[in-house]
Amino acid sequence: MQFDRIENVIDIPTIQDKVVTIVGAGGSAPLIENLTRSGVQHLKLVDHDTINDVNISRQGHHPGDIGAFKVDAVAQKIRAINPDATVECYPIDFTTLSDEEIHEVFGETDLFIFATDSFACQARGNIVALLLNTSAIWIGLYAGGLGGEVVFWHSGLDCCYRCLCSSRYEAQKKANEQGESLDPPSDGATIFDIQLLDSIAGHICLGLLTRGSDNRFGRLIDQLGTRQFLQVGISPEFRVNENDVIRKYLGIDENCKPYFAWNTIALSDPRFGDDPCPDCENIRGHEFGDGSGIMLRMKPNPSSP
Image (cartoon, rainbow, N blue to C red):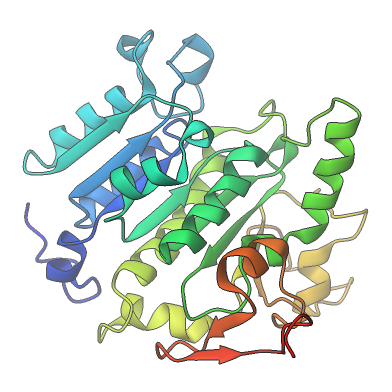
């Protein structure tokens, strides 16, 4: 592939050596294709679903793909863009894999992308990222496509996905007790909504894969610092608990007429890791990194003398 027009902003030699694992190959199909166009050439795809006719209007698949596993269809698209790409397909349920299988199959991964609306898969992904000490991104589109979120983690950050989304875990626990699910329905979410969110996620992907390079993507993650929870307003109707959170956090006056949707806010955990979640306690103890590879103890373990 020819990268002359983008090599000034993407560290191509670095990104070509990275291994990216994507869990969910439906709505993320265009994102995966665009990462391939940006230099990613070692990919592992995980999704047990096959393509049906309702996927064509919103997931970037084609009518000729109907009946195929999503991972196989995406793999063909990747190879059409870059014949030199190496692609491994796993048409399996990611949540069924044991820790040993995760280490064996995905131990060399440099970045996990969890592009799924399954809470169980997102939760399992957090454990896997911590176990392997591997950077990860979670992409979530809200009900109706009114908004969405991109959450990321790397070893230099105190707060993991569960730390940031602790209330979601509690809500899911209650829903499970009632035999319900909090997974958002996909009805009303168009391909434009999905790709708007995925474009923002793509920037974070490039930032994590080339962090430290002397260009705008290489500097992106450090510029964000601890602001690892990104919320995107896709529709003017987007609300959280009836509040226009985008307007609130940006401090935009109600009478500001130029304001509209398509804005993104980047938030930090207000506790800054002072209250580690069960995943952090079980996998990392209470130790968090400062981004330099040095481990810092945030607070003593209550069971310690």
